[in-house]
Length: 444
View 1 (cartoon, one colour):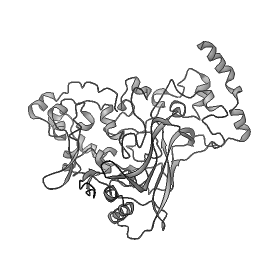
View 2 (cartoon, helix red, strand yellow; view 1 turned 90 degrees about the vertical axis):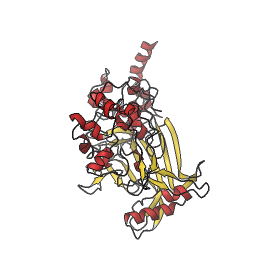
View 3 (cartoon, helix red, strand yellow; view 1 turned 30 degrees about the vertical axis):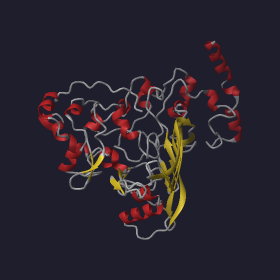
View 4 (cartoon, helix red, strand yellow; view 1 turned 120 degrees about the horizontal axis):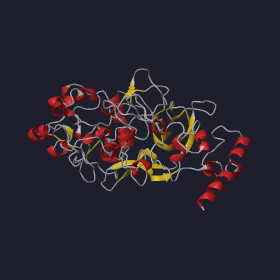
């Protein structure tokens, strides 16, 4: 995990101040005029709010902010509202409790939580979890303070503060690699030299996801709704003609870079929130089917960067006829949960009751109470989600002509709106035979 090396932090301009006064949080960062106003600025970013306006997803209320603060889908089946950091009721078997919650990755102390504003919120920000190369993650754990409040700990040690710099892979992946209920569950990629060419070349996350005033650019994953309004794509670096081969460059107009350069994916392929499985610690988790990173094959679809959003389906919109659409790879995930028979909408779940006892419907009832839903009729059902494949980039193992243009190739041309005669032509070796024969001769 997190194999990209942590770069040695450059000497920080505030070193003497920190050595003399210690580190008290964001107020230290803003002292001496170093980063004035940064804490307040950070409160308006997705990393703090877990929500934003979402212009490219159908069926959403205009002007309303959506994200993990309030949306519900079957990878998580809950959100920050119903599954904030809390103490899970004691296991009937062991009598022990534990802390859990969707917002354990929130970069604050939990008392000033998702979307909070004001001075207390500013002081609660954990700057070092992202910026310190010597952050002690053992200190970043939940506990009860002297008043009984559940608090997320922080490493505010002088040693950590003196190691500040650009975020490295570990700073990012400590949260992003463990999203969705466990390591490599949600996205199914490990950013390491062995699995991604960018990591192999010494790049870290923020080389591509380069922040502007703590606003971090993201891609167009159909399931990643909230954003800071800044986008990143392969073309930012590789331009519209990234290959020396003209034939390959001609594909770029209709084939996304990811399609050829991310031939594998991984992570959870299905979850069942109606059936919870007891683990070794005697607490329960939703029954999950998962694969290792680089273990599963993507599915391919046209995508115009707008999202079809329905109770039983979240995925790409687009078509072959639409010139703004390109073929992209996606990880398919299927989640089973409870829907409201009356409205057809997915019901949220508070994980605390089922984690303790395995009673899934008790979790639905608790979430409904929190959300003010008084009448509902829970029925089990499945939701299909298309996750964008944007990591695990390879150059050596990228798809070649043969992988797509063959009878048993990775692309289902009929499903991609090609006619039968077109498919017959596109899956014939005559398309690539001479070219690959010459390449083979050169390799000999």
